[in-house]
Amino acid sequence: MNWISVCKIDDVAEEEPKAVAVDDKSIGIFVIEENYFAVENVCPHAYALLTEGFIEGNTVECPLHEAIFNLESGVLESGPGCRNLCVYPVRVENGEVQIQL
Image 1 (cartoon, helix red, strand yellow):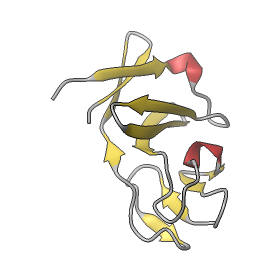
Image 2 (spheres, rainbow, N blue to C red):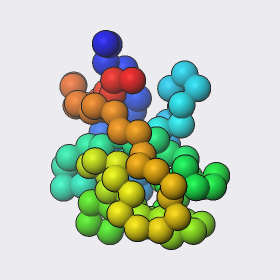
Image 3 (cartoon, helix red, strand yellow):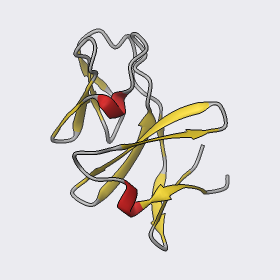
Image 4 (cartoon, rainbow, N blue to C red):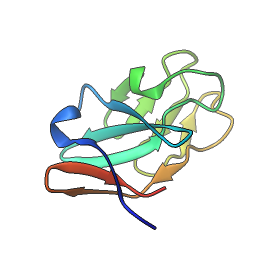
């Protein structure tokens, strides 16, 4: 699998995740204490972008129906999310965030 550069590290802040599109996938890039995470960006319960949600600790809460997902594992922790999120491997190289699909 190849690594794909999706943004620069300066494009992402703890309070401002970055939404990116790769192929036909909407992916949210999050950073928590200098650790980067990539998860599917659309809540599986109903169309809402998780990058517009509420971040607390290592979780994001869907802005529409309060489903809470762990950003490290993608696990649905509470609420009507229906299933866990897809997560993608992430690395930082030369100031760029890269993911594998």
